[in-house]
Image 1: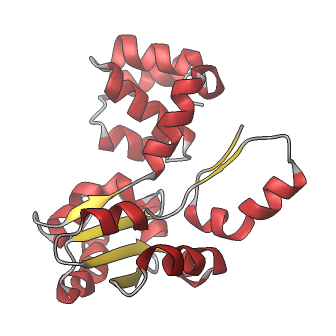
Image 2: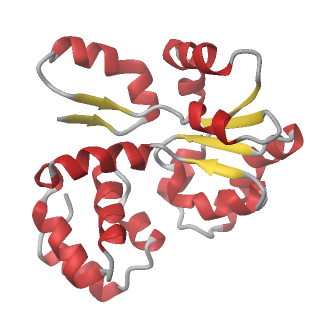
Length: 212
């Protein structure tokens, strides 16, 4: 199993990867345009993604196939993925950038927004505040990874799952989400912030080698 845990990398390389290794299951991640279109009540949806994803032939094929004549606002979130890696959630510079990219979506009157980058769920609360409570946010990357994780947890590191589930967090669902976020390439510090892990919990994960 090879998970291409990036929308931009999926758009650029998943076809070539599948051709190069036909016997391997290659899982790509694409913006959740179809569920966003299913969720909208007003017929207006948005997609937040990198410029490279939105320019790609793969995404335009998806757009043509799914959207038809329905309104889709494409928001190229220049610099947002890099800012998420550099700053903690709640940082003022990061919040300003999120606001800059969400303002056009509000102005477009969308009521469902697909997150087209695997970095963006790490600041989903901030994005939700900027868009407004009435806007539904669609993130399909974690769901796709969870489906494969459920089939074979060993691919993601049983030790990682056991440590996180049994010692760090009280529920299996949260443990699964943490492991999947790490498998998707999310920075460890960002995952800690997202799930409010304490310093002692972070240290235990590092000592047991559970970061996969």
